[in-house]
Length: 275
Image 1 (cartoon, rainbow, N blue to C red):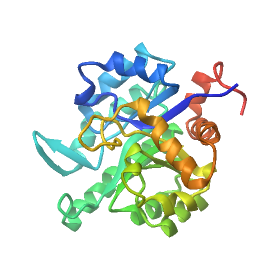
Image 2: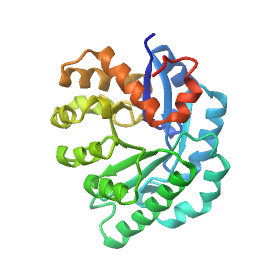
Image 3: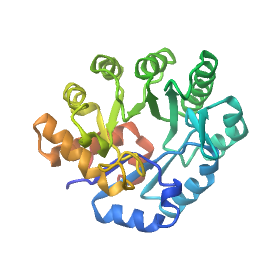
Image 4: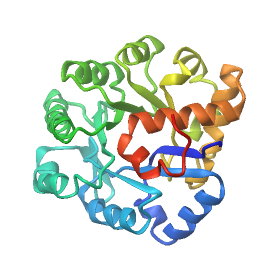
């Protein structure tokens, strides 16, 4: 029995989905999506995501996390401990419902985190959330913009093993360090806009690849809202780059997702083939 797609990184609680969340979820199911691994960026999303996971327990798989870049009104800034500390108790409160901690990580984009002090503060926030993940025995859903090498090195230093590096854009040599550590990598529909990731995808074994949309961002068309049902787009692209059939990529990436997120697998095992 074939299994559906798993979108391993999407933002179902984003403002862009506020008006039609149920329609987006229903459309995803109809287009062969088996589950959504949903991440947060800031504390204001926590309760809404937990509520959605309770309404759609066999589909919305929640991850809670504080992103390395925060938004104050329209302005972006580097995260501080003040963004994380007020919600630390919520990780414990919802620990039984969570499938992972995320979206967490490092973002050393020069105009967002130009100072060493800001980067050090990001590392503190990141480390505290990694400690939570280890304590709760949960995987981590990782952001690593302009910091691929530093992120993988820090994860290894912190002895973290269950890792998804979403939308990874580092060098293939850096990615292979993650592969050797047993990490997984996922790619959104935006990879089809050009062939910059082709070399990277060729070198990462399929057994270390998952699928994501990062919706509502990083869709096939920059000007349009991305949606989870676009998950077939990176699947087809990865298949083309690797010379495989899309069905094979879908099945292997879904099995990878179930291994990476075992709590999701246990929720869905009645619907899936035995791995």
